[in-house]
Length: 221
Ligand code: C5P
Image (cartoon, rainbow, N blue to C red; front, side, top):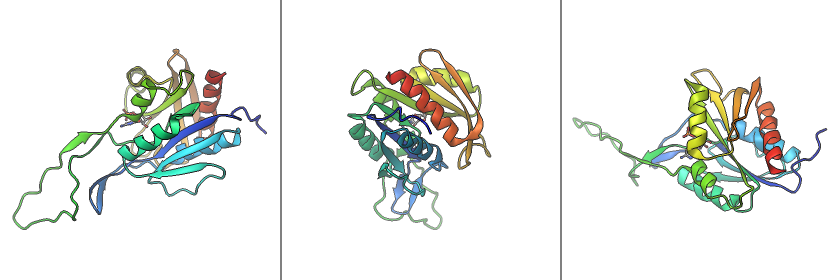
């Protein structure tokens, strides 16, 4: 049994994938299952933390002893993360947040019309929650962790993203058609703003979660 090294700490974890509605029945979404975020929430709770899990469109059972806050869109996730991060020791953004959302929402279902070209979908930027949290920490000792799914130049792109976002740790995954999303396993490198690099070999998402909390607790000490 692990020692409860997160006892007395409050951690916020985001999980799942945001959905950006076009009309009452359609949305732009992604393939994130939420499994990595749920593994982070479960393992933090097992290590004694009070855990708030901001869950976007997941179908997984609520982990025992974790406060689950369901959200739909990126804007809703931002509200929830900012609110709960106010007194958090660590914030881990494992969710796949849509970078863009449709500019307009049609109150009624969009219909096809005979002989008419389909209307283009205009997108606008969503707020970058990870960058915002990193740059406006509720207290200086707060540890902020991001995730990055990259398909090529994984480490170089990860380093650039870590600097751009301003977080303390960035978990970099290589993704592709058959990798990571929805699977039970993961393989990653955790980059630190201090220049550190921690490789996590292919294995259950719990392993990666434990490594993330190891690195977070070290920074909280
Ligand atoms: O920029 P990119 O989407 O690759 O960054 C991924 C990381 O940033 C993840 O931790 C994700 O949760 C976070 N993110 C965010 N808000 C966005 C987009 C991504 O917090 N609008």
